[in-house]
Image (cartoon, rainbow, N blue to C red; front, top):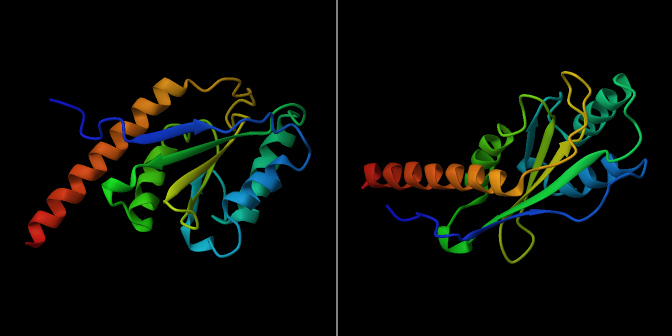
Length: 166
């Protein structure tokens, strides 16, 4: 069977080392910027809002005394507009994508709809909340395969739900 998505999505690790003391606040603030608060979520922190994410990311880093170096990873995921995903669809997909990291790392996401197309931003704490080890590398091909699977599964589920309504 051929690819359902046929490569029509982008997974990009944003350039940057994110070593500045304000990196967590800056990236999470950008991802969940004002006017976008209803399209945010994540895992590994409470409350599920920007301040909760900022505070908990930093507390994990401080608890393990890993406060120097890369503070987080910033990833953008852009499904092609031909798949007709809406903001609510991307929230569900983002929750699923969080599972790639959430057994070990805190993840904050935001859906941006203020551009020409909908896309997902992820911030991943670079410090493992279970053991304090730093996330030094993200296998982009492995992540891309995981994202593809989540997009395909969601597209199939959405298709059959819409067929049931007919």
